Amino acid sequence: MRALTGWCLLVCLLSLGGLHAETVRIEGGYGHQGSGWLFGSREDQACWIALPWHIVQGASERGRQFRYTDQTKRIGEAGPAIHARTIPGLEGENDLDDLAFAPVTVGRRTGECASRLGLPTSLAYVEALRGSPSLEFVYVQRSRFMRLDVELLSGRLDKARGGLLLMRPRNPADAARLQKGISGGIALLRWQNRSLPAAMELALVDDRESSFKALRFDRIRAAFEALERAASSSEPTGRRGGLNAGFVSVRGAVLAQSSSLSELLKDGGCWRAMARPGEKAVELVLLVDEEPGSRIGTITLHSQPGCGLPIAAIVEGRKPGAGWSLISTGCAVAPSPRGCRINRATPYELRLRLVPRGGHVGLSRVVLE
Image (cartoon, rainbow, N blue to C red; front, side):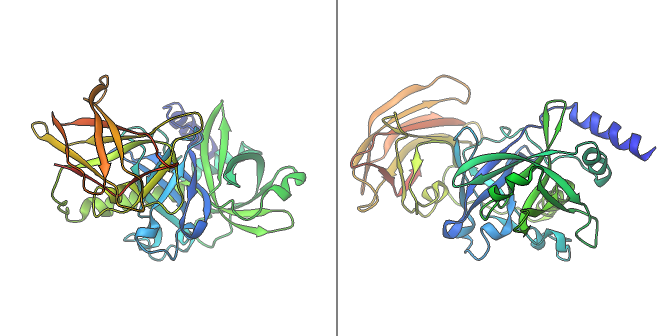
């Protein structure tokens, strides 16, 4: 009866759709790279990334912000990462010691992340794994997405709920492919041509056969739900003055050591990028998401000496979902620029096209008034 119940739950949940592989490449602090799982909250549809804590551990709060790239080469930013063991009620959960969650701040609009955190119960996973002798493992190595088949060796590495799994390559010849740098790789269940996250790789256990430890996704899901409960019960914090805005799209090749785009809307920094191969401009899209009736007066684009050369940006605008209209072909990007007139009611999107001089473009601060 338990087996029948588990399979019924699996069938019902998968039939709802929206379970698509969303493994992303993470560029963490100190040059660390790894993988994570990009997903959407069931509560407010906001986008988040689940990742191993050790990729960002030891960094300052600013350093726990990171860039990510999805498998279509779409880039974005997330953070600061939140250690799962700091979530109220989870302080003593040892199997969550290397788990973190980071809110997506750049690159995805609310509601754009259709993937979820898998099945809700350990029973459902036990039944699903029992019927899946082989799983697809998606990971990042040398900045490339890689895939191979893995198999489950054990489901009870920990002394608590059996949420830590031991896995290894199904083909012994693939063992050499799993080396350092695969942190956060995702083991996916294959079921009726759908991909369902089963577990996240945390650490290699045996270098000879490349067996690795992975955290089952029902534990990841339970931890995230605890994070949301804690956030909903906390006091709301007031935001700083100015319009409520965020970057929702980036098109370009971001240079190493760049500030996060989110910093440009706050205290400033130095964000630098080159145009992608075959393209002439770096493109940024800003969403100003105020209550209806508010207006964007001007946008001012600062670029301090040493960050980027002065250029003129092309600015276009639209209501979300509508077509783009030209606003300006000469919005100055400079150390002390004049603001460019926008005069549009919110919510509103602004697209900035920046043609590099000297190889790259640089932005130090973006001010909306």
